[in-house]
Amino acid sequence: MKGLELSTAIAKILDAKKAHDVKVLKIEDLTIVTDYIVIATGTSTTQVKALADEVEYQLETQHGMRPSRVEGYESKNWILMDYDTVIVHVFHPEARNYYSLDKLWADGEEIELDLIED
Image (cartoon, rainbow, N blue to C red; front, side, top):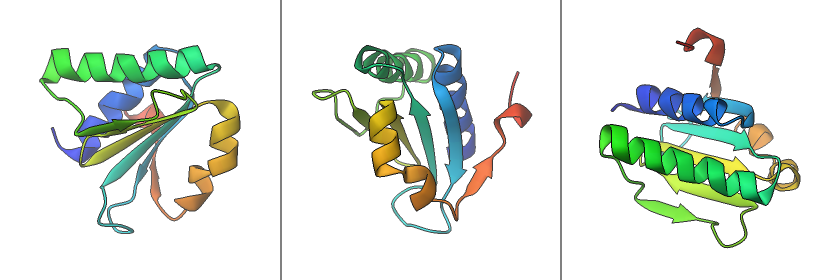
């Protein structure tokens, strides 16, 4: 799966699990770390974990993909999942506001999610 296809698949999984404010940003021209980031918010630490679990489960069962790295399961305030060309950030609302990745990567190209809906 290429970066755009993977990032939009992740966004759809998160949306289906009722994540809030899901964004996909193309940042490949801004960094060598990854091509896309997906940012989403859960309403509680329980939902943050459930969202990350669902992404991991769906990508593994449907596409045989596992993240190369996962961080943040202990605190459940910010879970990061590294799929190489796509990095997923699932935040608790306060953590998303505090770290403000939306502003940090504001120069990235936001992928319009309504254009990728099934």
